[in-house]
Length: 391
Image (tube, rainbow, N blue to C red; front, side):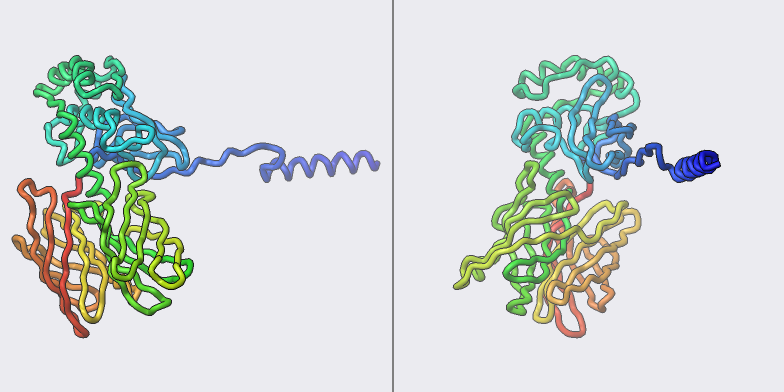
């Protein structure tokens, strides 16, 4: 009788465990995220990351498994592999890659050659005809010198000519370098806010200049209850660190950091001029950014009553302007709305301020400056910055 009861209990426990998944193994679904391939936004590349495969979208988008590598190919040519993240560039595909590396420049040259309209400033689009023709292409050595690479891909260049019925241009290395650096500056351009801690605490707001790559803005110290200006002394580096130095020469404070992605920044701050040197860490993230924007402009505003940043996006189909601002001393976010009439920007903020500014673009309309004034009930001041065409 005891044996029978024991057997029944054993069967019952086994059924319960089976129903709860006990005694078996389950495989968690890998976390995925969306990234963007940018040598300007590049569509038509095959990608694979874990179980995720596909072709990059019109904006260069791809899906990757978080923490896993992602490989990019076009037919028989492997462009390279990098850890999946929010934005992957040719620099990430080369060990210790920089914009000056031959292996990076040749990848940029190759992708620019595949662009269906020979204009990489508006994005790189690889046509379906070229994608099909690429199946038989041999793997080139991207690490060889410029002239050797030109010779190595001459056959591919001829195949693109036939597939697209156009004359594909393989740019020289200096053109590819300039193009990539412009793309990187525009990718990082915008406003970031965050906090710092250590021997002092507070908040900061910085912007990345779309033309120079310098990082500047403001920091508010809880210790001294004061706002200090930060000026870029070393612009963002064109490598995998995207490192920079920004600081206040008068106060002796420096922010030495790097961009962990196009949406995040971190680093070390220090002040060596005080009787007791102070040091700590800082981190922050991007504010603002519309997915359908044609241009993004960011500037610093300053005056007797407030200091901070405003970043806004321009949608050219409607000439409408939307964005956000950040008051550094008050640690407050606010919205920005307005319109662009010719070169004149007019807008208002959710805090009641008004903005009037002039946008001046360069000859090819890829970058520009913005300057003007802001007024509010409690004060007024100036507004200056830069912007770029999002490619």
